[in-house]
Amino acid sequence: MEHGTPTFTIDLFGLPVMFDLSTSLMIIITCLIVFFVFFFMTRKLAVRPTGKPQVLMETLMNFVKGMISSNMAWKQGGKFHFMAITLIAFIFVANILGIPFTIILPDEAHTLWWKSPTADPTVTLTLAGLMIVLTHYYGVQMQGMGNYVKSYFQPMWFMAPIKFIEEFTYNLTLGLRLYGNIYAGEILLLLLVSLITTGGILGAVGGFIPLMVWQGFKLFISAIQAFIFVMLAMVYLSHKLSDDH
Amino acid sequence: MSLLAAGIAAGLAALGASFGIGMVVSKTVEAVARQPEARGPLQTIMFIGIGVVEAVPIMAIVIAFLLMFTF
Image (cartoon, rainbow over all chains, first blue to last red):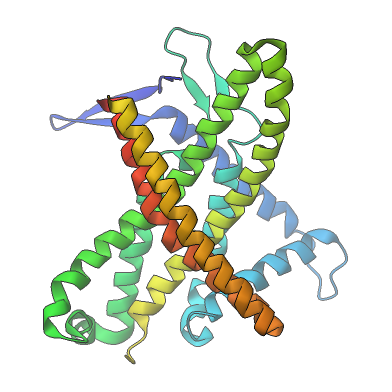
């Protein structure tokens, strides 16, 4: 079950900085898919929608709008609308890329080239860190530096260390939840595929139905995880934005 | 030995997570049965709750993977 990862290392002032080439490739593919899907689905816009693409896009926009406005006032949260749409589309496409097939080169290291980019903790923790930094930025911008610092001492002054640690926990749980779900799903997919390919006729018959069921369930998990990621990012944003406690 | 540790960690994590998520979902079902028109918001809250509950066993699974592959 060990798979090699194609890596590329550059020397940055004596520090080795390692790039995972397959993750980078899959992120670029995800970005291209998201960009072209959104590009071609929004070409023929009309006040009276004529085709399915526009209706689908409007449904997605209204869905994300509902997610934001269930957490904060639309006057405050409206500026995060497109960010949330981009985020949910990126994470969803990234999650489902690993479902249909995988590409493992037949060399001795079994280099894994095609996978979900979110099955890599660095990607998900970076996304989560980005969101947490954004909450702090908008927290300072919307309620001022004084109120922002004061919010750490808000219910009681001795809560400050807990509130400080909480920020790191948010980052960790937000990133690791996505990573753990997608990575565990991919491991199970690989196990089922290896059961089918090496288990003989009995393994092929016994593993086929569970594989299909698990692929369907993983599609559901992918959607739910993308939804939860964006929803929790919005919840954390609303914690920082609101000045009434 | 580390495989055994990984198995115990994953199993206990699954046990705790199933109890926690079961509790969240059962309370949501009760609430929807009591007030069916509040189904949409309750479902959203349920998924957030499941996401929060799930974070801890996922970390246990990550620890299990670490035990399996690095030790």
